[in-house]
Image (cartoon, rainbow, N blue to C red; front, side, top):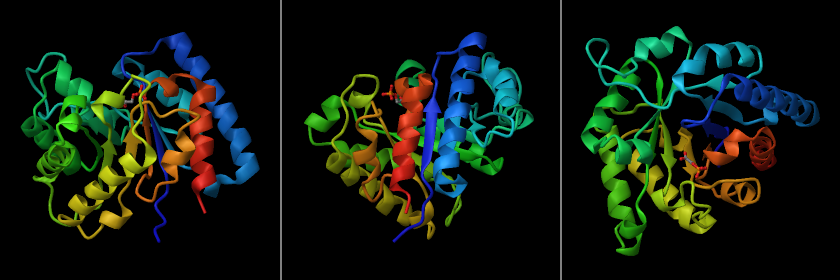
Length: 261
Ligand code: PGA
Protein backbone atom coordinates (compact mmCIF):
# COMPACT_ATOMS: atom_id res chain seq x y z
CA UNK A 1 0.00 0.00 0.00
CA UNK A 2 1.01 3.56 -0.45
CA UNK A 3 1.45 6.43 1.92
CA UNK A 4 0.87 9.26 -0.51
CA UNK A 5 -0.26 12.32 1.39
CA UNK A 6 -3.35 13.77 -0.21
CA UNK A 7 -3.13 17.18 -1.88
CA UNK A 8 -6.14 19.49 -2.07
CA UNK A 9 -5.54 22.34 -4.50
CA UNK A 10 -7.78 25.33 -5.20
CA UNK A 11 -7.60 26.87 -8.66
CA UNK A 12 -9.18 30.30 -8.27
CA UNK A 13 -8.98 30.99 -12.02
CA UNK A 14 -9.97 34.63 -12.74
CA UNK A 15 -11.93 34.98 -9.50
CA UNK A 16 -10.47 37.19 -6.77
CA UNK A 17 -10.55 40.60 -5.13
CA UNK A 18 -8.64 42.10 -2.22
CA UNK A 19 -11.66 41.99 0.08
CA UNK A 20 -12.91 38.61 -1.13
CA UNK A 21 -9.49 36.94 -0.76
CA UNK A 22 -9.21 38.15 2.79
CA UNK A 23 -12.65 36.77 3.72
CA UNK A 24 -12.00 33.48 2.00
CA UNK A 25 -8.57 32.91 3.51
CA UNK A 26 -9.50 34.02 7.01
CA UNK A 27 -12.43 31.58 6.95
CA UNK A 28 -10.26 28.84 5.54
CA UNK A 29 -7.46 29.30 8.09
CA UNK A 30 -9.91 29.41 11.02
CA UNK A 31 -11.64 26.24 9.80
CA UNK A 32 -8.32 24.54 9.21
CA UNK A 33 -7.10 25.36 12.70
CA UNK A 34 -10.27 23.86 14.16
CA UNK A 35 -9.81 20.75 12.02
CA UNK A 36 -6.16 20.50 13.05
CA UNK A 37 -7.15 20.63 16.71
CA UNK A 38 -9.57 17.78 16.08
CA UNK A 39 -7.54 15.39 13.92
CA UNK A 40 -3.93 16.51 14.38
CA UNK A 41 -1.52 18.10 11.92
CA UNK A 42 -0.36 14.71 10.61
CA UNK A 43 -3.80 13.76 9.38
CA UNK A 44 -4.31 16.90 7.31
CA UNK A 45 -3.79 16.84 3.56
CA UNK A 46 -1.40 19.28 1.91
CA UNK A 47 -3.31 22.39 0.86
CA UNK A 48 -2.53 24.64 -2.09
CA UNK A 49 -4.34 27.71 -3.43
CA UNK A 50 -3.61 29.24 -6.83
CA UNK A 51 -4.79 32.87 -6.97
CA UNK A 52 -4.36 35.25 -9.90
CA UNK A 53 -0.85 36.77 -9.94
CA UNK A 54 -1.75 40.32 -8.81
CA UNK A 55 -2.73 38.87 -5.43
CA UNK A 56 0.41 36.79 -4.70
CA UNK A 57 1.73 39.38 -2.29
CA UNK A 58 -1.54 39.74 -0.37
CA UNK A 59 -2.21 35.99 -0.31
CA UNK A 60 1.39 35.26 0.75
CA UNK A 61 0.99 37.55 3.75
CA UNK A 62 -2.41 36.12 4.71
CA UNK A 63 -1.12 32.54 4.50
CA UNK A 64 1.99 33.18 6.60
CA UNK A 65 2.37 30.32 9.16
CA UNK A 66 -0.97 28.79 8.10
CA UNK A 67 0.55 25.66 6.54
CA UNK A 68 -1.31 26.46 3.30
CA UNK A 69 0.89 27.23 0.31
CA UNK A 70 0.14 29.19 -2.84
CA UNK A 71 0.94 28.27 -6.43
CA UNK A 72 0.58 29.74 -9.91
CA UNK A 73 -2.01 29.06 -12.61
CA UNK A 74 0.47 29.02 -15.51
CA UNK A 75 3.96 30.26 -16.41
CA UNK A 76 5.95 31.17 -19.49
CA UNK A 77 8.39 28.72 -21.06
CA UNK A 78 10.85 31.65 -21.39
CA UNK A 79 13.08 32.96 -18.60
CA UNK A 80 12.52 36.66 -19.38
CA UNK A 81 12.22 39.18 -22.20
CA UNK A 82 9.74 40.59 -24.67
CA UNK A 83 6.74 38.38 -23.89
CA UNK A 84 3.98 40.83 -23.04
CA UNK A 85 1.49 39.53 -20.44
CA UNK A 86 3.55 36.47 -19.49
CA UNK A 87 5.01 35.53 -16.09
CA UNK A 88 8.38 33.85 -15.56
CA UNK A 89 9.51 31.16 -13.12
CA UNK A 90 11.83 33.65 -11.41
CA UNK A 91 8.80 35.86 -10.67
CA UNK A 92 7.12 32.87 -9.03
CA UNK A 93 10.29 32.21 -7.05
CA UNK A 94 10.39 35.83 -5.86
CA UNK A 95 7.02 35.20 -4.21
CA UNK A 96 8.02 31.72 -2.91
CA UNK A 97 5.54 29.91 -5.14
CA UNK A 98 6.55 26.32 -5.77
CA UNK A 99 3.63 24.69 -7.62
CA UNK A 100 2.53 25.66 -11.12
CA UNK A 101 -0.62 24.43 -12.84
CA UNK A 102 0.20 23.66 -16.48
CA UNK A 103 -1.91 22.48 -19.39
CA UNK A 104 -5.25 23.42 -17.84
CA UNK A 105 -7.98 22.77 -20.38
CA UNK A 106 -9.00 26.45 -20.25
CA UNK A 107 -5.44 27.44 -21.29
CA UNK A 108 -5.43 24.76 -23.98
CA UNK A 109 -8.81 26.04 -25.24
CA UNK A 110 -8.64 29.83 -24.77
CA UNK A 111 -4.93 30.43 -25.33
CA UNK A 112 -4.49 27.70 -27.91
CA UNK A 113 -1.79 26.02 -25.82
CA UNK A 114 -0.60 22.89 -27.61
CA UNK A 115 0.84 19.65 -26.20
CA UNK A 116 4.29 20.78 -27.40
CA UNK A 117 4.12 24.13 -25.64
CA UNK A 118 2.91 22.47 -22.43
CA UNK A 119 5.78 19.98 -22.67
CA UNK A 120 8.29 22.85 -22.80
CA UNK A 121 6.59 24.63 -19.89
CA UNK A 122 6.72 21.43 -17.80
CA UNK A 123 10.45 21.12 -18.52
CA UNK A 124 11.08 24.80 -17.69
CA UNK A 125 9.27 24.51 -14.38
CA UNK A 126 11.00 21.25 -13.46
CA UNK A 127 14.46 22.58 -14.34
CA UNK A 128 13.84 25.60 -12.11
CA UNK A 129 13.28 23.21 -9.19
CA UNK A 130 9.54 23.93 -9.02
CA UNK A 131 6.65 21.43 -9.12
CA UNK A 132 4.57 21.17 -12.30
CA UNK A 133 0.90 20.30 -11.73
CA UNK A 134 0.13 18.85 -15.15
CA UNK A 135 -3.51 18.76 -16.26
CA UNK A 136 -4.81 16.27 -18.79
CA UNK A 137 -8.32 15.30 -19.81
CA UNK A 138 -10.55 14.31 -22.67
CA UNK A 139 -13.45 16.28 -24.12
CA UNK A 140 -17.01 14.98 -24.15
CA UNK A 141 -16.72 14.17 -27.84
CA UNK A 142 -13.46 12.27 -27.34
CA UNK A 143 -15.06 10.21 -24.55
CA UNK A 144 -18.13 9.45 -26.66
CA UNK A 145 -15.90 8.32 -29.52
CA UNK A 146 -13.99 5.95 -27.23
CA UNK A 147 -10.77 7.97 -27.45
CA UNK A 148 -10.30 8.70 -23.74
CA UNK A 149 -7.36 6.35 -23.21
CA UNK A 150 -5.57 7.47 -26.38
CA UNK A 151 -5.99 11.18 -25.55
CA UNK A 152 -4.74 10.73 -21.97
CA UNK A 153 -1.80 8.68 -23.15
CA UNK A 154 -0.83 11.29 -25.73
CA UNK A 155 -1.14 14.21 -23.31
CA UNK A 156 0.69 12.51 -20.43
CA UNK A 157 3.58 11.07 -22.44
CA UNK A 158 4.03 14.35 -24.27
CA UNK A 159 4.03 16.42 -21.05
CA UNK A 160 6.64 14.16 -19.44
CA UNK A 161 8.83 13.70 -22.50
CA UNK A 162 11.46 16.35 -21.67
CA UNK A 163 11.84 15.36 -18.02
CA UNK A 164 14.85 13.29 -16.97
CA UNK A 165 14.10 9.60 -16.35
CA UNK A 166 13.24 8.79 -12.73
CA UNK A 167 11.91 12.27 -11.96
CA UNK A 168 10.32 12.46 -8.53
CA UNK A 169 8.76 15.91 -8.65
CA UNK A 170 5.51 16.25 -10.59
CA UNK A 171 1.81 16.27 -9.72
CA UNK A 172 -0.65 15.02 -12.33
CA UNK A 173 -4.28 16.14 -12.53
CA UNK A 174 -6.96 14.26 -14.44
CA UNK A 175 -9.63 16.77 -15.39
CA UNK A 176 -12.20 15.49 -17.86
CA UNK A 177 -13.04 18.63 -19.84
CA UNK A 178 -16.76 17.79 -19.82
CA UNK A 179 -16.74 17.82 -16.00
CA UNK A 180 -15.07 21.20 -15.46
CA UNK A 181 -17.49 23.81 -14.17
CA UNK A 182 -20.46 21.84 -15.46
CA UNK A 183 -21.65 20.08 -12.32
CA UNK A 184 -21.02 16.75 -14.07
CA UNK A 185 -18.41 14.54 -12.42
CA UNK A 186 -16.72 11.39 -13.57
CA UNK A 187 -18.03 8.51 -11.46
CA UNK A 188 -15.41 7.26 -9.01
CA UNK A 189 -14.75 4.05 -11.03
CA UNK A 190 -14.55 6.07 -14.26
CA UNK A 191 -11.99 8.41 -12.70
CA UNK A 192 -10.07 5.54 -11.06
CA UNK A 193 -9.71 3.83 -14.43
CA UNK A 194 -7.99 6.89 -15.92
CA UNK A 195 -5.91 7.53 -12.78
CA UNK A 196 -4.63 3.98 -12.93
CA UNK A 197 -3.75 4.47 -16.61
CA UNK A 198 -1.85 7.66 -15.69
CA UNK A 199 0.00 5.81 -12.90
CA UNK A 200 1.09 3.20 -15.44
CA UNK A 201 2.29 5.91 -17.85
CA UNK A 202 4.26 7.55 -15.04
CA UNK A 203 5.78 4.16 -14.25
CA UNK A 204 7.10 3.91 -17.82
CA UNK A 205 9.23 7.02 -17.11
CA UNK A 206 10.10 6.89 -13.42
CA UNK A 207 10.57 4.45 -10.58
CA UNK A 208 8.85 6.97 -8.31
CA UNK A 209 5.41 6.59 -9.93
CA UNK A 210 3.96 5.01 -6.76
CA UNK A 211 4.93 8.11 -4.75
CA UNK A 212 3.59 10.77 -7.14
CA UNK A 213 0.19 12.36 -6.61
CA UNK A 214 -2.57 12.20 -9.23
CA UNK A 215 -5.40 14.67 -8.51
CA UNK A 216 -8.94 14.53 -9.83
CA UNK A 217 -10.55 17.76 -11.02
CA UNK A 218 -13.95 18.58 -12.49
CA UNK A 219 -16.88 19.60 -10.30
CA UNK A 220 -15.39 18.02 -7.18
CA UNK A 221 -17.45 19.24 -4.25
CA UNK A 222 -18.44 18.57 -0.65
CA UNK A 223 -20.82 15.77 -1.58
CA UNK A 224 -18.75 13.79 -4.07
CA UNK A 225 -15.23 14.32 -2.66
CA UNK A 226 -15.33 11.45 -0.18
CA UNK A 227 -16.06 8.70 -2.69
CA UNK A 228 -13.68 10.09 -5.30
CA UNK A 229 -10.87 10.39 -2.75
CA UNK A 230 -11.49 6.82 -1.60
CA UNK A 231 -10.28 5.46 -4.95
CA UNK A 232 -6.82 3.90 -4.72
CA UNK A 233 -5.19 6.14 -7.33
CA UNK A 234 -6.96 9.43 -6.53
CA UNK A 235 -4.54 11.35 -4.36
CA UNK A 236 -6.36 14.64 -4.02
CA UNK A 237 -8.35 17.22 -5.91
CA UNK A 238 -7.89 20.23 -8.14
CA UNK A 239 -10.89 22.31 -7.24
CA UNK A 240 -12.38 25.27 -9.14
CA UNK A 241 -15.78 26.60 -8.02
CA UNK A 242 -15.82 24.87 -4.64
CA UNK A 243 -12.44 26.46 -3.78
CA UNK A 244 -14.08 29.88 -3.78
CA UNK A 245 -16.07 29.23 -0.63
CA UNK A 246 -14.18 28.52 2.57
CA UNK A 247 -16.86 26.15 3.86
CA UNK A 248 -17.05 24.15 0.61
CA UNK A 249 -13.26 23.95 0.36
CA UNK A 250 -13.02 22.92 4.01
CA UNK A 251 -15.53 20.12 3.44
CA UNK A 252 -13.32 18.73 0.70
CA UNK A 253 -10.27 19.07 2.95
CA UNK A 254 -12.16 17.16 5.67
CA UNK A 255 -13.02 14.44 3.17
CA UNK A 256 -9.29 14.10 2.45
CA UNK A 257 -8.54 13.83 6.18
CA UNK A 258 -11.06 11.04 6.52
CA UNK A 259 -9.24 9.02 3.87
CA UNK A 260 -5.86 9.23 5.59
CA UNK A 261 -5.01 6.11 7.58
P1 PGA B 1 -14.39 23.01 -11.24
O1 PGA B 1 -12.97 23.37 -11.91
O2 PGA B 1 -14.10 22.40 -9.89
O3 PGA B 1 -15.11 24.32 -11.14
O4 PGA B 1 -15.07 22.05 -12.16
C1 PGA B 1 -11.88 22.49 -11.78
C2 PGA B 1 -10.70 23.03 -12.56
O5 PGA B 1 -10.90 23.58 -13.63
O6 PGA B 1 -9.53 22.90 -12.12
